Image (cartoon, rainbow, N blue to C red; front, side, top):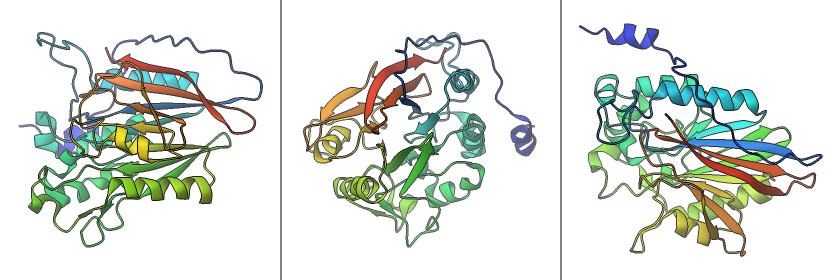
Length: 304
């Protein structure tokens, strides 16, 4: 019989295969600083690659291949941030058996900087999140879930600022409405706050009070809907200072970020990379001496 404790103690991230990805980047202009943002979403406990005889995505994905790719990029770039946009839980027997511990441990080994909560993180109730957070060596950023009257009080953060070579990157997180999607007993007294109002508050604080140079939203709202449901595109259009929305929930495969226009008429990037760890998103920002950011390169990198 499989010993759960021994398995988790002994499992590590191998470097299965050599994954060579050459990204054609422009030469950095004198004095410019570069920030590389890597991201995933809707991992759904896909620890192993898809089976070799699968009808789709045969042999693709898997933690080891993703880890090798991330390690390679980090060896080439000085300032790398790695984020996840939620739904880490649910989708394979690994979650059924390890309840999220394995996923969090492996993400910690890969050096994730932050994640936000998806609706499937609530599949085992608030206890299913709280009991596993000790295995995550990275924070969960969620700005519009109020956990004050729950066991998750103080266990997540509303925002975080990352300092990269003198550049301040502010990150906040938005979760999807739980009512009608998640059983009431699984979220208990957690309160859902309006994501648009929350986004405006977070980005204004990060821009004006914290003086950040780049503002990123980790979102599990979904990229867009036919009705008036709040989505990433709605957030982009209603905000003024958010530069990048890293999305999830709708399992949307984008070869490159969508471009939207904010309330000030400026460009906002929205990206999402499908599901199951099949793609690693990459967006490179360059910053001038004046602190102005410009996108240089974006890639949806297959994890094969």
